[in-house]
Image (cartoon, rainbow, N blue to C red; front, top):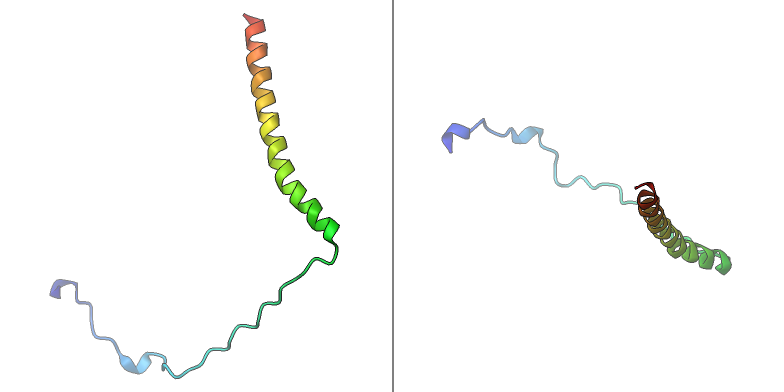
Amino acid sequence: MEKYFVGEVDTTTLPSSEVKKNPAPPVQATTLNNQSSGIFLKLLQYLVPLLILGSAFALQYYGKRSKSNES
């Protein structure tokens, strides 16, 4: 381990442990006043991935179908 020894630590340049940091301000939770927008967002969270998945299957089906017609 002595070959990896770089040097001594100068303890006078280290910050003191008594310094107190400013506490972070409390986080305020935001609430949705309109419940219909919350339902709409939940619907979009499920509907958009399903639409993407459905379009991927449709494009795959269309791609296989058009390949078989070319031969």
